[in-house]
Length: 214
Image 1 (cartoon, rainbow, N blue to C red):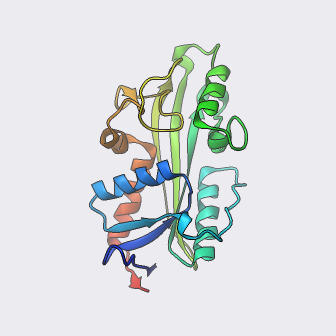
Image 2 (cartoon, rainbow, N blue to C red):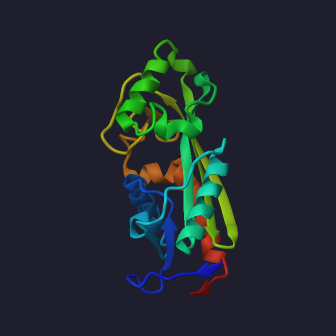
């Protein structure tokens, strides 16, 4: 794997994050710093001429792989792509890969949560089990060099609790934490979250991966 460096952080491995979601970028950077990893994540905002990658695959892993390759080849940089979402058992796994646009293209988090609550209106509490799932893919312009995934289990509440997090976090009551992700301390959320678990596997790989500086 070719190693690009970020001149603003001497010696740091620079990785372009395949997303313009700033909340996701902030969470990823926080998890990396807590892990003591010498990585600088670069925003796609640094590449304004790069078109947004299509998300047309049927699985999280497929979308993550496609996005990582798209941005690695269009930016010429090592790229990390994340595709993640919520799977609700009572809804046959929906919203799944459509989580970010569950209420339609360009939907806000509030609109997505409102649609989910409406879909679950008549579902009893014991059947409101769900999980967050995350798939990661790391690629350079030669291809995908690493993939990882992570899941975390919980139940969906009938009303929102907490002011933190983003997406479906105010509705997702974590089995591990006994609180919603929106109520949890960020470090505690990162410890058990789907993204935190996938990133832990990625960070283990990066610590051991042979690299050449470019």
